Image 1: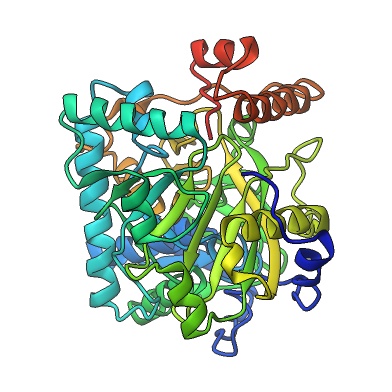
Image 2: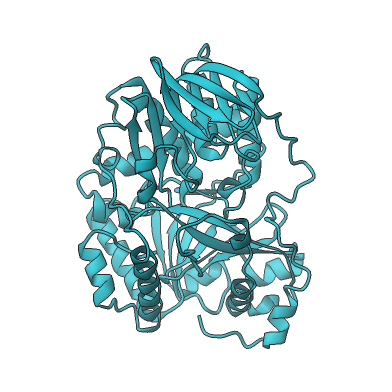
Length: 474
């Protein structure tokens, strides 16, 4: 995007009142945490992690087998990490977008798309069945082009989808058509996925899933980090600060945090993502940008933005910078990055100059669990008594439910349509140790920025990554 005509002091002034907390978590209706575990517990299934991955696993386990004894432990509070900080885009895609899936699993892509669509339908049904008050809206999403080369690429991609029979529910929008949907002078074209994405309130989804788990009899312990995982008889034992849990089977949904199975750790790195939330738009401000159909939006650059309307007509504006901290550490101080907030504010007013004078109320960040293939991987440990899913790379709002099904299939030792997938059976390449991981990621980020500024042309480094199947394209 070209720089905003608004002065630097203007768009930095818009951040003056922004609270450094996630908008979604800044809610007076936020539920009280469950008590921490003290003493010993035993169960059939122990779920570690109270984000989407763990909550869906516990809920589906009880739905599959109501008499199963399930315990869930969470190190802080349910939904406080990525599950309460994301943009609230609940996508059908299990592969971090169709392009990534088509590149990696071309022979399975129609099956993966079908399973993803079914998974999103199941989420919508669960929202109704469990009365999950999470502001679920099946609005779809538009990928927008803001540069001429991006418009050409979107059109070529749409034609390829048609040739492969994968364009159902998708529509190419020219400049007039995309601006009719959302009025930005930067929009040149769009690709509209009409049914494959829903918008929701991410923290309310996590809180609703916790309440549903409790209603079904899951014993939930918060402020209870799992410290160690060791075999115990025919099952496993997990130590916590004030107690322990013995379980026949364990499902690990810790994602960006260090996995209790140490050999899994090299497969993910934390990448920090940042977002802003505006004050509610007035009726006149909303009319000036259109957006009557409330789709989620994302631009087509390598360093991309994602944006959407909240239920009370605020605009969430996030993305662009993706920050990898040297050593791959997850720390609270990385959740704040004023220089990124200033950059995002400038980009926002470039996209929507008609909203000059609007202020941001919240600015925050959080860590995404990234793997080298940009979509989740799965596995078992300790002779099948432990299962894990990780590496969702920012598209976990929907895909974590699929991951929960996979983990439960693996723990049951069942061969299912999910466990037979190559995507499930194979793992991505692990990240190298430092300083190579930091150097490679920094070089990739620099190369992606160069490609955005050079008509999308990928340099030798990016082409090499493409050939290796690392595909750094988002």
